[in-house]
Length: 346
Length: 90
Picture 1 (tube, chains in turn purple, cyan):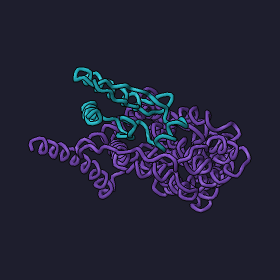
Picture 2 (spheres, one colour):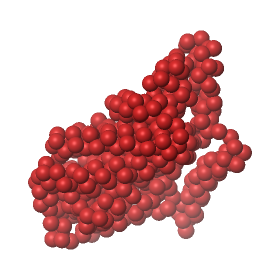
Picture 3 (cartoon, helix red, strand yellow):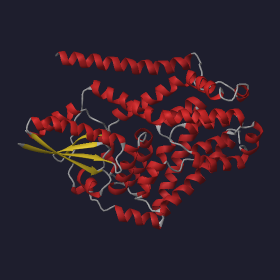
């Protein structure tokens, strides 16, 4: 009995914390307090060179802390409470379901490479084959929940939505195309030898009590923060100098129009980091005059992050990797131009 | 003396969370040694065909006790594993 009360209290404390975090975000929305940094490039230039990153970081964290806290907490909670058994069971099913799952689940399950690599392998080996596997792989870094929340809060929700739609479409097309190529089929044949029907489910997940699950969710949120924040802060320091010293006329000349989209997609690729820096850097360039079309293209330029690429390239051959990168790049250019035209900012 | 087989199923090379799960199992195993239960820990690759044939698609880190997956996609604490192993040993 005592044990029960203790657990209830602990769960209550954690739930209160979660509600406060969500409440803070809603409150900031109600009083229209911006969670994005406020300084303009011109303000930054007036400070001495060593002070720029400090001022920028203070500006960033005084506004962005709630947003980061919210993003990490929500990512942790979703990851912990999403019914993983149910998802993995359906991973082995038909092709159409495979594509739908790959698109729908990638945003929630892929904040950690722990999940991403096994699921990629799982879809390929036991499930719907190379097409959905590639879709999953491409969708994952492009729009995981952390990136989307940050894009929405820092830049704008319109851009975040465009990012989701554009990367989902590109991922789907890449999956379908690769599953039709001869080299894609070869890999599928090579790996898809596992017959799922022959193996009875030997899975009986033990569910811990609520307070432990909540605590695990927060611990996972902390783990994500620990992984991402150091790089994020280094990235912010770099961004502060970009924003202060990159002349507006260069950005306006080279990062607008169709050529701007092309250039953004090319530099966005290698510069892509899975550490959310691309969002802040994109925001800085946008402040300096980059067009919305180029911004989307920039945000979509994420062919790979290295840890995942290593694990994946062992399974997929270079031809698949190359096809995948070309389609991803083409997608970012096409959607960049399209979005630029639709939003009137090309 | 009772023996229990515990498989820690993770990515190869091991990700940080898989290593944490393995450490938790090792801790539990040490405690159980005094209670007279021998725990054989095996580390298996989540991406290998054998694993997928046996357990299907999993999210790492996963832990299987006597060939049944009990934990998936999270790091359990040693006490919890201890309980699960004791249950399996009965």
